[in-house]
Image (tube, rainbow, N blue to C red; front, top):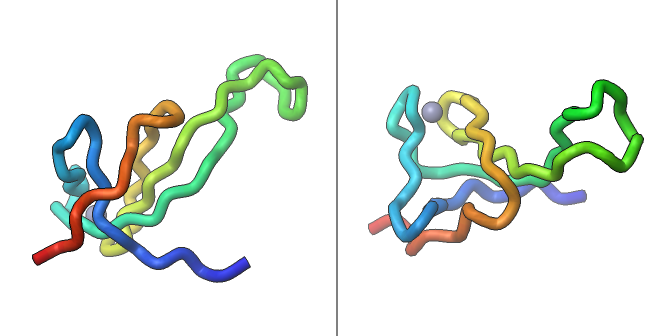
Amino acid sequence: MSKPVPEPMAVKGRRLACVICGGEAFTKRNITVITSGAANTGFNKAAEAVTCSSCGFIHHFVTGVVEPADPLP
Ligand SMILES: [Zn+2]
């Protein structure tokens, strides 16, 4: 698996900025949030983790709301 390249992301058409450092480049991956109390039960929620490439803060979103944004100027 190759290392993901950080890129700008948007939610509802608004460019995502890190809540900690204001960074605008992120990597995104799918995660599973354990809501049933046990892993691998099939009853957990799929989500997306968007990690700030600058400070590492992880922003969590439900699946499907984070989209690629236009490249930084
Ligand atoms: Zn950050």
